[in-house]
Amino acid sequence: MTRKTNALQENVLDPMVSQPVTVRRIIWENDDTFTLTLDMSALGEGFHFLPGQFNMVYVYGVGEAAISISSDPARTSSLDHTIHRVGLVTTSLAQRKRGDVIGIRGPYGSSWPIDVARGKDVCIASGGIGLAPLRPILYTILKNREDYGRVILLYGGRSPLDLLYRVELEKWANDFNVEVLVTVDRGDSSWKGHIGVVTSLFQYIKLDARATVTYVCGPEIMMKYTIDELERRGVPQTQIYLSMERNMKCAIGFCGHCQMGPTFICKEGPVYPLPRVRSLMDRKEL
Ligand SMILES: Cc1cc2nc3c(=O)[nH]c(=O)nc-3n(C[C@H](O)[C@H](O)[C@H](O)COP(=O)(O)OP(=O)(O)OC[C@H]3O[C@@H](n4cnc5c(N)ncnc54)[C@H](O)[C@@H]3O)c2cc1C
Image (cartoon, rainbow, N blue to C red; front, side, top):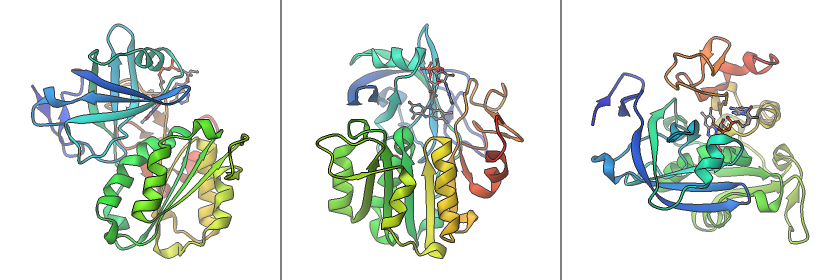
């Protein structure tokens, strides 16, 4: 198999060619979101990616969609993608069965910088499916938990049934000393937790602003309010990282579908330090 490397994206398979991989398992996280586990053993030496990167996932005869990798980067024989069923490709992916073959190309894009957080507190703020691209950085941090100070996870979903990775949320809190704070927009009769938007969770935590690195992913409106809140609390912009999303086609910086002002999200992003995209986020319909 051809592997092409470049300075930015080492270990990228030939960027224009999807590689066939087999579906190992599909787990439904809620009514319209599922985690697709792919068997990567056919790719020989394994598949390596960095937290925050994504693949183009291809259903033969249907089409491709950009999907973040949501599994542990240290696990190379299989790969998870957590997928929200919204349109043609994701609905078709939801219908795959164990043993089916689909295509992937990648990994693409920038990653959550992890070294900058060593010795510091970490605050991860996520909304909805935005927790999926953050899960790999959590796995990585928790492998070396003692290298970091406080680890705070703020997570919001539309309703209790929409929350992802519920078993892991408890495990991270109980076994790894992660301060997990969860909220929902709408509760139900079983919900005893907080109700409100993700930013309303900030009232429960006191951040040591200068010593905190933050990673943010969710709907753009959630990211904007989260950034406002972090800045109000004095977290320097250079310590805030976020993952941007735009519709994508080629994923290698040619087609321009994911262009946001001067940047192509597929190449320079999806993960950006806030100062790089702050002014772009304030401009409507960019
Ligand atoms: C870097 C990156 C990582 C992503 N990671 C994930 C992930 O982990 N899990 C996941 O479920 N999805 C993820 N997405 C989003 C996913 O790529 C899109 O939802 C994709 O279009 C779905 O394909 P589809 O054919 O099912 O839907 P489509 O038929 O393409 O679209 C369905 C609907 O969503 C709208 N839409 C499509 N893409 C976008 C977009 N990017 N922004 C706003 N509206 C859009 C369309 O206009 C349409 O209304 C990611 C996107 C990017 C750019």
